[in-house]
Amino acid sequence: MYIINSNLDFRELTYGNNPKMIILHHAEASSCSIQDIHSWHLNNGWSGCGYNYFIKKDGSIYKGRPDNAIGAHSLSYNGVSIGVCMEGRFNVEEVGNSQYNSLKELVLYLQNKYNINKIYAHRELNQTDCPGNNFPLSRIKKECLGANSLIESSSKQNKNYPGHLLKYNLNSFDANVKVIQNKLQNIGYSVGSRGVDGYFGDGTLLAVRCFQRDCSLMIDGIVGENTWNRIMRE
Image (cartoon, rainbow, N blue to C red; front, side, top):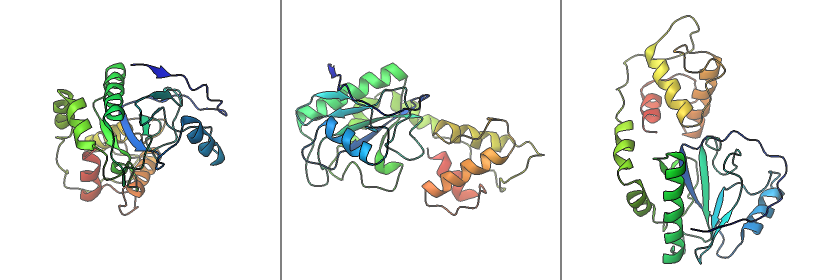
């Protein structure tokens, strides 16, 4: 596999990305280059290309934002993911063999490099239809997760809702709060400077509210059955 150095000139970047998942996108453009995307994102006021990699229809792979830089491609997940964008509009086009084969090779490489066993379409995490209805999502997951799919499945078999509301309380330790904090941290929602400590404080409250917002749940900062089950699906 050959990754082309795009030599993009970024504005100031923020570093500290800790990749735990790969998020797949399309450019929503039938014909474009990594330089086009870089220009579009600069015009948005961003540091530059928000994706870490870009794959042309001919299968050529271009380097975008550095892997260790915080991305700009998926709200609330930019600090825990690698963003891969494909040239094309996959609501009206199909992914060709050359492009798909390069995607698969790149995804396998990234999985091995960062020990990643989660692959998502952008639409699975945010309110969007990206990367389009014709994108071969189930195929890439099946072919790339392989044995890791068992790990992913087992990680989602978490304990059931504890039967009581989890809400703001600085004075009481709850092991269920610790479960929630750990899950939120793993999917990119910081629970604050105290970390995963089992106490439902300000950082956890903010993380829960942000998660509820992103998942179109009632934003009350309380972990009831609906919020619990939605977090456990991640």
